[in-house]
Image: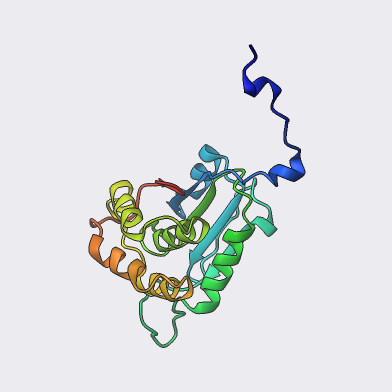
Length: 193
């Protein structure tokens, strides 16, 4: 007697549909740790969130088209002479995350790896995987990065854009300010929990 599985018809690629892209991860660091972080994780895509006049040397393995530079100050309200995180920055971040093929990790960095980059990683994870729970991801972010203090303005902009009804903002507020640090330690933020 034969098992029914032995006689099952194989489905064609057209019937199955395109393969789901792999769910790799985001890796967050400071500017100082960027070269080593990119090399260690094999990242081929980088998001930079840093003051517009800060020189950032792109790691040699990162091509210009796979590097998003978002010039903004780490502020939560407009200040004369500074660039606050804005909707245009968020739109560029979300578009870059959408284009990322997830074949290799995506590196996200700011000056210290504490505020702008942690906010961007939190936002990207929720945009890429809309099934993620905001509160659970915020708690995971805190567990992996004790010094993380995600930029509240950037999170609030994303909360509205992604129609999360205040859940992102509340989740980040609930984890509170991170531990004092001059620079964060590089960490991985998964796209699934």
